[in-house]
Every structure is written in structure tokens, then in C-alpha cells.
Length: 108
Image (cartoon, rainbow, N blue to C red; front, side, top):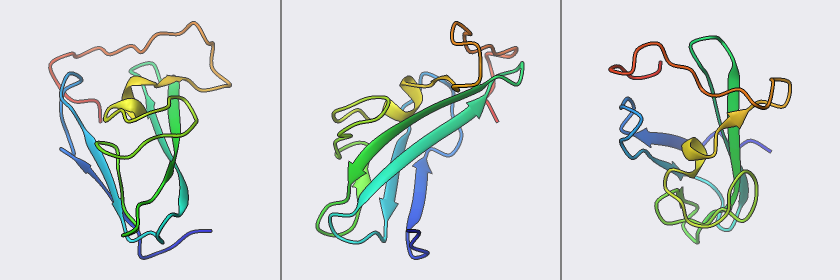
């Protein structure tokens, strides 16, 4: 089920790999179960993904800074879980490491 009133914000929207990113979702139903997914491709086009299962609070919000992932690629309260737990997608070679040509710029 998709609720169009929900909004997702990642802050900051662009940063280097060692900077913390907080993902916040507002506009969900109270205590709604939600799966957050992150995907990105490295410089060679290899796809990486991670996901966490969350439950919104009584105001219908989730923030990776305070909310607990109860399953998925990681568990617990982990602000950077969606990014730190990135692994090669199931169809990719699993021993692949994330490759970046330019380490002085964000990965867009």
C-alpha cells in the first residue's frame, strides 16, 4: 500500500562517504510497518542495495536517527544503516567491492 501523503527526506542531500546522512519519513499512519530501501551503483555500474524494516511512531514518522530497524540488512537504531549495510544486489557477484573513481566528490 502506498500513501501519497508520505514524504521522505535525506539530509544532507549530497555529501561525502564519511558524512552522516539521516533519513526521515513523515505522513505515514501511526504504527505503520514500512520497509526502507537504498540502492546505488558504483563507477562500474554494479548495483548495491540495503533495506530495513521499520514501524512508524505515534505521529506517523520514522527517522533513522531514532527509529529501530527490526529486520532486513541490519537491525537496531543505526543512523547510517541503509548506507553502511549496502551489499551487491542479489544478481551481482557477491564478492564485488564498491568502486569509485573519484573519491573527492559525492556519488550521484
